[in-house]
Image (cartoon, rainbow, N blue to C red; front, side, top):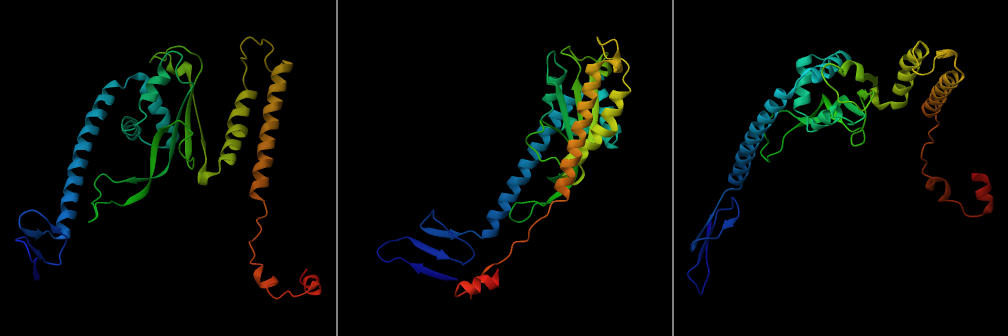
Length: 272
């Protein structure tokens, strides 16, 4: 510890070497740097507790809104993602985009409702804070609602599609809403889409007996042309996927070692 006195005044400053001087009274004290860190951690902990309290209130309000329509979605998601209905419900009521479900149920509402189930970086609720106030973020499987355009798709996608613009109710949800999903393991979207179309959609279409106003069904020329176009699309998709997987990637070469000693045209010919 050293003391310094300014000549020509009464102000005194003492430095301990533990932190920055804090001006105030004529005698300036110095707070240890660790004190500021501890205060920051304390504030962060209090903030997290307050956020958790608010989140619980929001979840309780959303849980009270769940009815037969939500139960239908939850049961389909649980079966498709191999999760329990309790896990799916907890994920839904905790989601920032929960309001999209209500917009999907509304008359003339959203035409689709998407869910991703994949690894995301997220912070554990009971994770301890570091001395600098940060926490460890680890990749964990998470089910969440998405618009499909803001997050990278690397896992499984479950989707609900409306059949009409009618209000979705608990009594008509199973008739008015179609459910499907496709897997995109390791981010291979083309392979997941190809499997979904070739193994699920096309067989379902070709076994369809009721085509609405088209009385002839599968014998109708327009229906046959439609199925042919879908088959052709899947074939094109498969070819594109194979071309991408079998592509040749050229290795970047440092050409300096080949050209640094070239002096005349004959050297260039030899190098070529």
